[in-house]
Image (cartoon, rainbow over all chains, first blue to last red):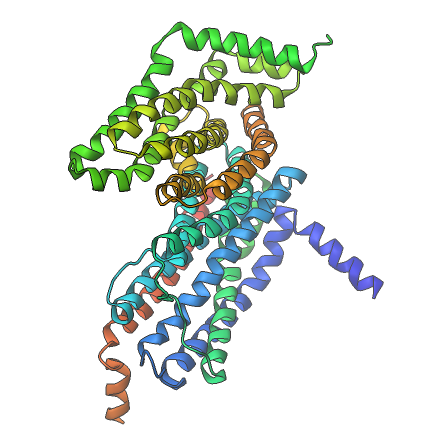
Length: 254
Length: 224
Length: 50
């Protein structure tokens, strides 16, 4: 028991070193991609073709299989980025700074997905492309925060400094996002006292709920795959002058 | 050298106030910008009293946010460029006090003029007299928080475009905007507005230590 | 068989919305992977040159 715990700790510390991470990730990346593909295809097939129709919304509710996992992912990724930022600022672990940067573009993609699918879901169900309800509004704000983060990172030339700056922003962001959600919630009830629960998802029976879970797992696996892909690129780019990079690349092209 | 925190604070305060008030444009510009933005709303939306007074909380707050963002460039950039910021850090005096004083100066340059101008804005937007007090209170708390955020944004984007610091700061200022407008609009409908003021106060209370410390961290990034 | 196919494509008249979302998801996920691979190729090329 103790031996495996020590092994885990050693693996964790080793992953902080770019060349070791690069070698380990080359082995794991095809599996991540494969499992992501399996879960996503399974989940989508199940949700679109097999799951029953909703009695209120008909077939349109199937957008939920994209919308809800994207929403969960966009928020989890931000929390992940804030944790990476925290580690980066306090312990100066460069790899967590690179992880933050790698995760940001994935996070903003998912946030865009939430907004677009939410909007498209809204047209047939509530008759309008956009509505200022609490959830969509706070997602829009999250989108802007992601954009600010990515924009700030791209303007600073020294990438380690850029990582540190974005870490600070991510920390402030994760603290203020609950405040934003609470105040948007408040704002929405103040200005729209109607009991029009806009984001009511269809009441879920297991044959609707299970494909959602599968899709969620698939999206998380995709995030892991994408993160590793981006992180490998980051690592190569930052350490391109070092010897291990040339060796690793020669090894790959064989 | 054993400078007490208070004397360190007053040294920076005196120096920066002198610099700021040397050119009257430093504190007049946010005020005029604020009033111009306020004026644009009736121009764009029509002068009916009912419309304007119902929009007044939002309009005043949007103008206040934008005007307070105008001057954040100047918080650190001058000192960074001529090397005074290096001297501050090398002197080993508490950098928290440095940042706090800079935030205070920024508020005196932007928040305070906006506060005074808001009285005029309230009149020209037909805000009922009873709502003036809540408006002023919300602006005091809100513009101070904006100065804190502005300092962080300025420190992160030091030496780069001003718009970038605005893009960084604006999403984070949304709770302030929502709470501030809620204070004024709930006083318009004669409801209790003190709850929102307390939340804004809490944000300020947590923000002062946390944001100032993070701003110090952000400033030190420039000296890696 | 064609009945179920018709049902799937049309989705009770809302087929456009659902299939748009599906293709949008597919597009975003594929674009992410595509840009990552393109960046990798660019990096490999620049490193091999040096």
